[in-house]
Structure formats: structure tokens, C-alpha cells
Image 1 (spheres, rainbow, N blue to C red):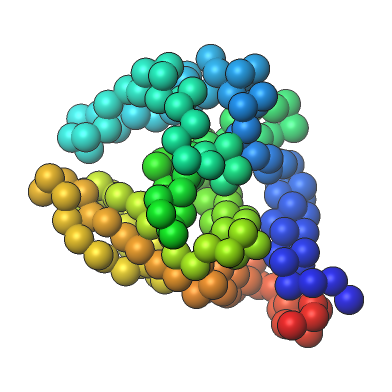
Image 2 (spheres, rainbow, N blue to C red):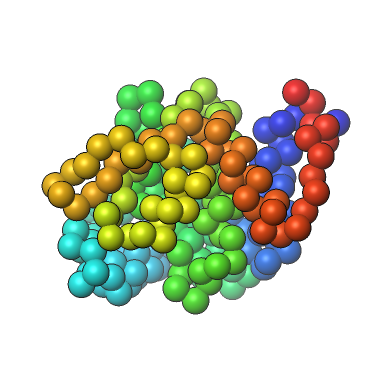
Length: 197
């Protein structure tokens, strides 16, 4: 019987394979070889919504190369079978918390559950490394994302520059809620006794 950690990691990997995707860490090697693709993907989305969200402005090359604190250990990318970026995330460590800097999904691939599968992966990765909380800033006008993250278990902590909401959540609670949401959306019945507790 597999461990709880292995169950969730394997579940995400297998679900993505079914959909024609893979997930991997954005480490120094990845960013070095795919820097232009990363810049194009992220800035393309930022430019798409620049008139909607006031603080969404294109990121310079230095932002992508900045290691921050342990960014290469917790940042993830989802790619299709042609290695095209489908979802891009930067996550680093802020003290005792994981901090989400960005999570962007290809506009043509939204609604496939990629963000939920990514959230399951990052939550389990954080739990594996002894973290308990996940936080990030969301634009106050990004209603769809805000509603989704509140359903996932995040709570509104504070307001910044009259534009962004700081959301904070417990990694274990988020993981479990996201799993339940994904399970219901995909009509799965997955028994918790599939792994050792």
C-alpha cells in the first residue's frame, strides 16, 4: 500500500497523463533552457489582461532568473506532449510559508482542471517539506480565481494597494478540498483507504 504522499503525487501525474500533459519542477536548468518560452508565455497572459488588472505588467528577464528563496524547489510547470507550456507557476518560501508569485494557464486550456491538479501537487510538495501554509496575492477584480481559491480553502487575510487581496490557507485543508472538488467534477469515487495513514 502506498504512502499518502505517493498517492497524491501519483494521482496528479496520472490524471495529467490522461489529459495529455506532464508536470515538472521549474528549476535552474529548466529556466536556463526555456527562458524565452517562459517570458513569452507569462507576458502574453499579462498583456492579455493588462487593461483589466491594473498591477499586471510584463515581467523582465531578471524576474524569471531571480532564485528568490527556494523558488527552484517549489515552482511547477505543466506542459503538453509537444512541451508547450500549459500552466506556469512560481512559488517560493516566505519565512514559514509557501508564497505563490503567479499561476497562469494557457487561455485555450482553461477549464480542464489543470489549476486544480497543480494545486494538489504544490500542496503535497509543501507538506512533504514540512510547510503548513500557502499564501498569495490576487487582483480584486479577478472574481473567478478569487471564488475558486476561496472554495479551495483559502481565506482573505488583508488588502494591498487597494487592488490585491492576500489569501492564506492551510496546505492540508486546501489539498483535501481541492481533491474533493476534482473528485466531484470528474465523477470519481476514490477511497481514502488506498494509502497508509
